[in-house]
Amino acid sequence: MGFSSWCFLLAFLLSKRAKLFPQNSSTVRSEPNLHKTVMHLADLERYKKFGGIWGSYMGRIPEVYVADPELIRLIFVKDFVHFGDRKDPDFGSEVLNELLDYLPGEKWRQLRTFLSPLFTTAKLKQMSDVMADSTSEFMADLKSECDENGRLKIDCRKRLSAWLIDLFARTTLGVQLEDAKNPDNKFAEAFRKMMGEKDEYTRLYSLSLSFPFLSRFAPTFMDEPTKLIVSTFRQIISSRKMQSSGAPQNSKDFLDVLVDLWSRVNTKEFKDLGITENTIVSQAINFFLGGYETSTTVLSHFLLALAENPECQEKMHEEIMSVLKRKGNTEINHDTIHESEIPYIQACIYECLRLAPPLVRPERICTKDWSYKGYSIKKGTRVMLAAWAANRNPEIYPNPESFKPERFLPENKGSLEPYAFTSFGFGPRNCIGMRFAYEDLKLFAANFAKDFRVEKRQDTEIKYKTGATLLMGFSPLYVDLVKRE
Ligand code: HEM
Image (cartoon, rainbow, N blue to C red; front, top):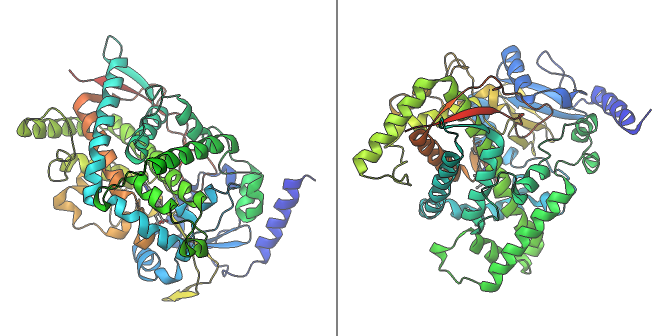
């Protein structure tokens, strides 16, 4: 019997003995074949079977899944003191173990307080100009690659992720990537490899979710590319430190804020909290990871949805062209993409985010026993928001699988239940980059609708990766772009 078989046997026995969460009709047994399961589709099946709450085990760790809006509100917002943390993973990297996503208690709170001002309206407007340039250059590149019939086949993930990584480098680090136009450039490749984009999850990976010490043998992030990325980020931050911009507080950019944090690592406050240089580098990487992969997934689904709904593309095109005509502009910028200017395009983005939330199971750890109306969750239980299921609540979204942007038009949006749109999470630990994300999604959508149509191909197919518990993965998604005259 091999090492992984022994671990599997142990996990199985322990899961049978675990008594933390009561077994009842809505409890699912531990899943040894997790690496073969598409998590968000499994969640949907369970939602149909059990309703808005069910339980499961990850090895011996009890888990509760919620998709009911009232339970989501209580757990993620109102009773945050019971559910303030996420799991404490070991990614096998001193830097990646410091990602804001996973920091606990006071350390998380302090860093979140330092980083939140980066996303104020004024800062976003400052970053938006850089994002707008990057987006229009991307459109120009795509146009220049079209054949004589104005068509271009793309692999959505590859093209969108390379563009977004460049956009993040420009907006957050103030650097332009070498060879940025090449979708296989060194930096983009390093991110893809670090995320193990082409790797399959194995049984050892399934086991590492029950036995975190095994994650050293089945790492979430690959070692070599991680080192390259860490050293590049470290270099960029140190060289800004040497230049010390001395910018006034209100015009500090992302890098200035990181440098400020870096200069405090020797203070008693930071030492007591365990905030080191690694913690600071990790936040820069976190913004890339949190931002490019998620936006790539949403925009890939966006292109697929448009290819399947050509009438939506025409409405989007008419909308953006009439805004540009009214404003006498040819360029799309922060003002052009205000919700009041492009309500239909914005509604299409909301509908994509509803149908394909890239973070499939935002999670919390219960740090203090909790109970409500006969439900009780014990300290130590992992609570997962089943995002795909919650966003398909048929009482709120009739015919939930169909793509209907009209649900999110200003005149209809008010009647929707806020806790049934879960794509950015909720409460004090919701997505810190949500406003940044809406900006890049809208800039892409508006530019795309102006310049292109998208069509399905014979080989267009979305095939989801199995075993991904956090971010939804999928195999290459090919579509044809068609240049508008
Ligand atoms: C379409 C794009 C995006 C989606 C769908 C998304 C979604 C999410 C979700 C669901 C969470 C967990 C929320 C919770 O547990 O309540 C999260 C957390 C986070 N996101 Fe995003 N995100 C996106 C873009 C971004 C961007 C652009 C950034 C950075 C600029 C970012 C940075 C983060 C960080 C740092 C966290 C951890 C926050 C914390 O624990 O305090 N995300 N995101």
